[in-house]
Image (tube, rainbow, N blue to C red):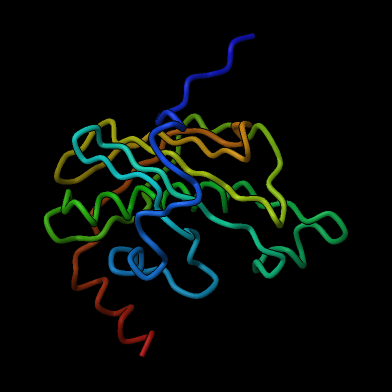
Length: 172
């Protein structure tokens, strides 16, 4: 059986040469502490509406102790959160919501195809397929090595800056 085509050809990015670090991601994504689910960005092409990044799964992830003891597996919802944060980074960086940050609005057609364990690097590829002032639709794929471990479609909505400023107060 032929391998499913990827959203972004792997020859277009280098997993050892990120174009944005965690500090850069933090300029656009508001998640902090246990909820930061991106390590670096590898590819960002606004003309194609595509982005690639990764999350290094460490033995210290918040879910390791309880999901599942003696055989830790990344929960599927965490893989989807990684994809949502990738889309949020792209949408916010490129101001696709006119100053608002992106909030997670839904998932469709999600399939889990493999395991992600501590020590794995989860590569997340995303493509914005529809965007309007009130809704972004993005398809995503998550890979470990050459294997697609998760894929689907996510929806995002704008969160007004006023709502986001409450987060800054909590951080300080």
